[in-house]
Length: 332
Image (cartoon, rainbow, N blue to C red; front, top):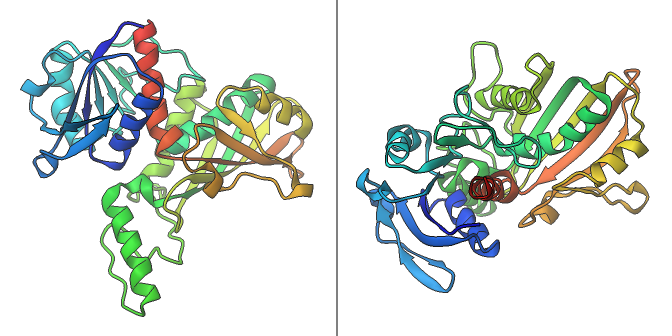
């Protein structure tokens, strides 16, 4: 692959720092890298490939001469600056969510759907979508999905650094018998679960629940696939879990499903209940793989399976997927 100039917008955030680490670990071919962020983070120095690089202020001019612009900041930043990066000749990879529902912008998980022609912009899906679709896609190929029911158990880091700091403070306050303050969360999250991820919509679902439904349909290329989801924020710092129930059009035994999932790219099966072996968020932290276990028949329908899926939401759910998309761009 030919070396290129990458700009990383949101370099000091949780996802941005993880992307920087993955770029280094995978020896991504770089001619140069520009680290960009808001005025609050301007001047911060981040280590990359043995050198400390200063974070610059994001401006339109800073996007000139860039081949690939990775947006790992908030939605507003992507909406304000992504078009300027494209106009300056860069291909934008956006993981903020700003363009995930734009039909003109491809939504890509490289192990599942090929990178289609684009107009200078590619979006990556929600981290829960990434880990879930990696397991659903091979099952759909094998037995054709009829219906999917998902309950998510989402870690705090999916909300960014401020939420992580608030969660840490809540834990400290409770352990020291102090009152808990809330800001990023609608309720106390420490030692609690909150059945709300995102804002509530008119249909009673939250924005993240509907994003999961819409993104899975789009990546699987089954626009009418019945999917329903409940998203719950849990008191974990890293790694999302998802309990997934699938109904299929054709029979698929748990043993056959294990074999299919074990051979699918990006997945690792951990499913030996006799040895109490199943995916755990603490074991997924820092790992590239998506872990699948508790694979069993759904006894309430003729053809159905239950799955438990866990992945590091910052690693595979965001940073690794972004870098894999960038590798596909260079290869093509």
